[in-house]
Image (cartoon, rainbow, N blue to C red; front, side):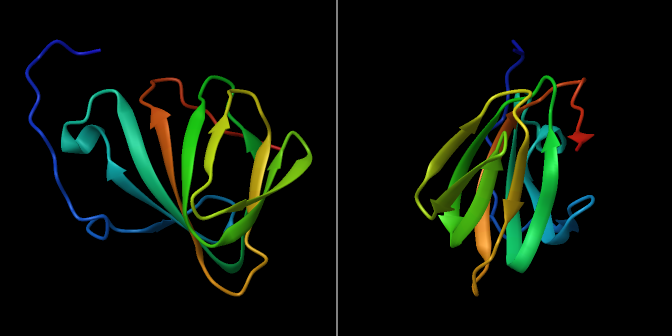
Length: 126
């Protein structure tokens, strides 16, 4: 944690540009708040999965995730177990838990994903 005086940040959720998610299809990511905005300890991201979109199975050895479903319904696999998650669901994914995402519906899926800022962020694709 930083001890320096920080400035508050307010921005539109639609302001940051979207980028394709690595190794995915029909999935984009936006960094809503992060180090470039002067936010020192956490990174808030919004993921969008178009109908048929998916992010393949992966895990992070040292990073946990907190997620909030904003729109739609998707298939979330956690260590091989299928969960159906919907708008309004809150999700915690501990470090080292394998996870994948798939939108099998006809409307887009959006969720927030908050992770701690870390110098050792690593993705292990499975």
